[in-house]
Amino acid sequence: MNKTRTVAYASTVAAALLVGGVLGATVLANVNAASPSPSPAASPGTFKSNEDPTHEKGETAAQEAAENNGTFHPAGGPGGGPGGGPSNESPAHEAAESPSREASEKS
Image 1 (cartoon, helix red, strand yellow):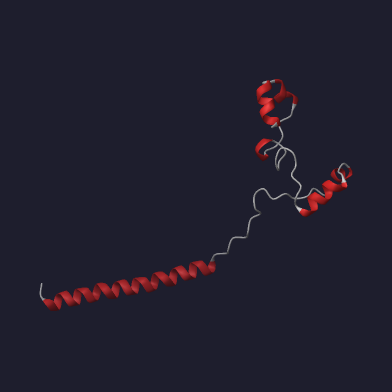
Image 2: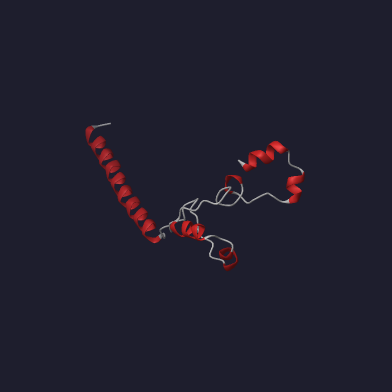
């Protein structure tokens, strides 16, 4: 291969890379501009006060104040049960549960 062919080949490759880079950047910029930005999700573990009238009748003023300022932590985690899940204190569950398992749920 002579020097002229090498220079021509290298120039062609460089021009192709440049054009590809410009086109790629343009396409990516248009895709990002067209896609909606995700809305911020509520952070896990954030407690939301229960303002249901039935719930409000059964709570103390201190519990209501703690709910309103974000310091209230219900027993058993955010969902009531161990690990924050729903409570499993149904009679069917309790009948099949060993004393050691019940003790671990209470702690």
